[in-house]
Amino acid sequence: MVHEAITSFRQRQDAKRTRAGETAKRRLDRGKGTARERIDLLLDPGSFTEIGGFARHRSSVPELAADRPLGDAVVTGHGTVHGRPVCVFAQDFTVFGGSLGEVVGEKIGAVMDLAAESGVPVVGINDSAGGRIQEGVVAQALYGRIFTRNVRVSGSVPQISLVMGPCAGGAVYSPALTDFVVMVDRTSHMFITGPAVLRDALGEDVGLDDLGGAWTHNLRGNAHHVAATETDAIEYVRALLAFLPAGDDPVSRPDPRPIEEALTSADRALEAVVPDGPDDRYDVRAVLGAVFDDGDLLEVHRWFAPTVLVGFARLGGRAVGVVANQPAESDGRLDVDACVKAARFVRTCDAYGLPVVTFVDVPGFRAGVDQEWAGGARRGAALLHAYAEASVPLLTVVLRHAAGIGYVAMGSRHLGADYVLAWPTARIGGDEPYEAAERGYVDEVVEPSHTRLRLERALRLLRAKRRAAPIRKHENLPL
Image 1: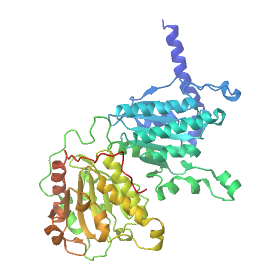
Image 2 (image 1 turned 180 degrees about the horizontal axis):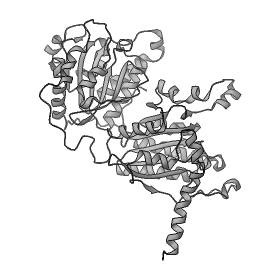
Image 3 (image 1 turned 180 degrees about the vertical axis):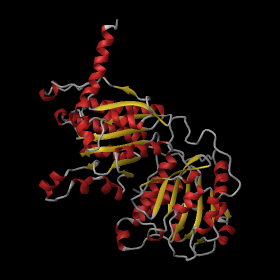
């Protein structure tokens, strides 16, 4: 006979799922899942351990006091992705619109603390109407505590935000403080002030998607990836987590494969990538696909500042960050947005111990009044700052153009690159690469087909790179 206490416990467990089930069908019709369904898609099957599942709000406001669902409006816990640990919280829109009150804020804070103490990534699934107005200033206070945690763990454990519905008002600042923001086309929205308020207060008439939709934020750099469906968004996050550290678990494969010393067909294909014409365009992805393991590259910020490409790949089994000028877009010139994009990415890689491999084909910085007025000097300085402060292995390949300060800014020896290659097609500062090699600015001039081999050897040599940082409170990045 089952003990009465166990029966009561099982009933409470069932109650947590029943409420979500009542509105799940309506959400499914709109392409949206419930908080628990989303967690199940993110984590390895059967790996989720819930914490705080019996927490309830403490509000005495009549409209809330009669309804105190278990867990309140967020599901929190931990599990694994690809067998590696991760903490997670998912706001539950089926409970008071996913609004944040005291208990919801405390639960999110607790799982963020657990991630920080364990040294593992934390993924936040955002789907909330905002602060719970019935709880007054308490909701704002809890937002502040979450923001503080975002800042304190920044660069210590990876933070990823999945925006799966509304994310408005004060709620937008937590995702903006995290490392990566992933949105879903047509169902994700982020804005500080909603369309109705803008229309009534300022006379500005704008639609929901135009104001804060997934494409709006991805084209402007506020988000890092836009997915067609929730499933695609979650799969992107799973792929992203494979490149990020989780506690003591390295992001390299346990047994990196031996270096392939013989040239492959992909290696030989590099001979024909750079066109003969000095100003002819080509897609740098053709280079990256030949150099990195299995030709795989997970791009970040793909639709923002397309003159520079950033993303993650593996080289000889080791996870690396990739930065590359994109000659297919405006000749690959660095503009204000490209500098911000690349600087942010280099600093992210440096924070999490990922080597940076840079591919250079840059005719310089974009000129124009608009660039000057948009803070060209300050944004360019941010890129210089990012490379110069990085302590991870820095490997650079000059493919063709490397002109002016654009050459310096793109991971040059002068900013601290550990290993610099140049192809025979390269022109550094307007000269053939041999002059730079004579001066020691370039370590080797190699045939394109030898690029992968040289980079793999250099990366293995630099695995234990150590660089002492000056004693200071923190650097002062030109924001």
